[in-house]
Amino acid sequence: MTTLLLLAHPDLEASRVNRALLKGLQSLSDLEIADLYALYPDNRIDPQAEIDRLLRADRLVLQFPLFWYSTPPLLKLWEDVVLTPMFYQEPDLGISTAGLPVLAATTTGGPSASYHPESRIGLTIDDLFASLKATTRRCGWHWQSPFAVHDVRNLDDRSLAKAVDDYRSTIVSFVTLSRISTAA
Ligand SMILES: Cc1cc2nc3c(=O)[nH]c(=O)nc-3n(C[C@H](O)[C@H](O)[C@H](O)COP(=O)(O)O)c2cc1C
Image (cartoon, rainbow, N blue to C red; front, side, top):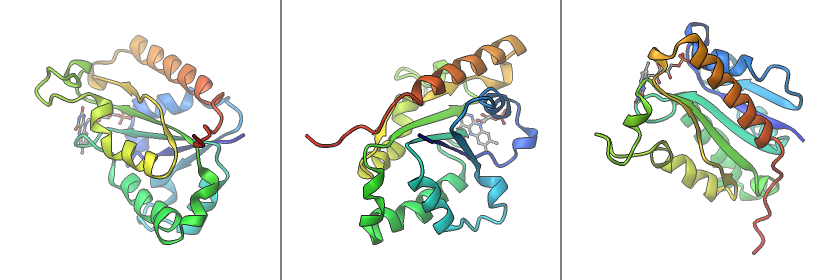
């Protein structure tokens, strides 16, 4: 039962929060981490390799820093390159992934109050990820409530350690989820 974590951080070496979150998951078994920017520094995603990786997965985690209220571009490119053949051009390819639980995990510069219906942008993180949620549902997968770490520039070491623990706990319970049957 493999959980695939797609990491999309264009500068992981300079990252404080995503790197720490990832390190906190190190000892978990059956977790395959695919660092998209390390795998594809030239942005040329190998469609077959990534389709095969996804077909091996029982669950999917999408981890990324929030960039302009969205994902970094390589994760969007992954959707285009991997999901288009699987669910549009050759829809039979994607059938075996039905029911895949999907968890988006993000980090934001803005404080949590910025991601509230009453804030200036007036949207929660779940609202912001509407297109990821729609894609998840279009693929017959199951969207879970996103995990987010906010206000990263003001996160002291103690708060970061707590975020790392919270993320690990979230992933530990996420990996207990099985594919959810879509049969009515
Ligand atoms: C190009 C770019 C766009 C960003 N856009 C947002 C944004 O829309 N909202 C936000 O809260 N933070 C934004 N940030 C801040 C990042 O989310 C923050 O730097 C990142 O989560 C830090 O994670 P790290 O320590 O793993 O690098 C942006 C940062 C960059 C570089």
